[in-house]
Amino acid sequence: MAEYEFLKGHGTENDFVLLPDLDGTIHGDLSPERVRALCDRRAGIGGDGVLRVLRRGDGWFMDYRNSDGSLSEMCGNGIRVFARYLVDAGLADPAQPIPVDTRDGRKVLTVDGDLITADMGTPRVLGESKVAVPGHTWPARHVDMGNPHAVAFVDSLDDAGPLLDPPEHDAATYPDGVNVEFVVRRGERHVAMRVHERGSGETRSCGTGACAVMVAAAVADGLGPGSAYRVDVPGGTLTVTWTDDDRVLLTGPAVIVARGTTSL
Ligand SMILES: N[C@@H](CCC[C@H](N)C(=O)O)C(=O)O
Image 1 (cartoon, helix red, strand yellow):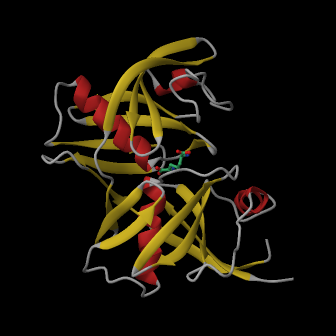
Image 2 (spheres, protein in one colour; image 1 turned 45 degrees about the vertical axis):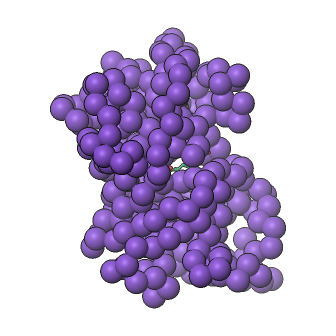
Image 3 (spheres, protein in one colour; image 1 turned 30 degrees about the horizontal axis):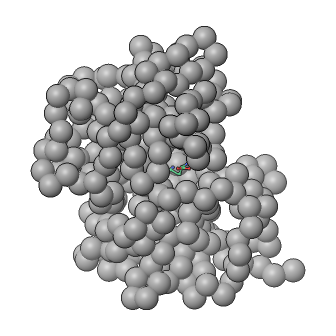
């Protein structure tokens, strides 16, 4: 049985299985079944998603899959873990910006010791719809960070309940599903969130989600580009900066915690 190299890493406990496949010859067509097997927390390695590391031209491509095997355009924590892998493996110089292509286009990462910042590009602040869990319904702001988000401000993070199932949402607004964030205020420019991710369920952090939350909070506060928020997630703390030139920067820790081989 063939054995393949893997690594395991996380960004604020949003965890991933990394599959180095630099020239694209190892993993072929990474099937949803294999992704589910790798992400299985009992029979597999366990993770919220898979990051396949591909070389593309003179740069890199992050082939991201949710734990249910579905594709997403972008993963903000995943791309920071991806950059950590490149640096640890000697494939990228931490003193230089690191460009990584994704299904949402090129992102550029910068490394500052334990912290990695991803330039996530320009957010799209769209309309409002509703999200619901049993017993609660909230208005939710649609923010597109390359992938879709619905941001709901709630009285207590407990109100979201166990989040075992995807929250109800407007299928016309989100024909491909949605990542739903529940947010409370913690202080000035400081919020806390829980998230139910499309394709992965409740996770302990979501980078694109933290960016969507920051943007929704800033808009609600009458702010916009030129502001920064602390965003607490169950797995740690992220900093999101909305720059004067309308780009969103996501900063936080990203670590590789294990490496080995697998036949999965
Ligand atoms: N955890 C990620 C987002 C992963 C993709 C998402 N579940 C989707 O389907 O859009 C992040 O850190 O951004």
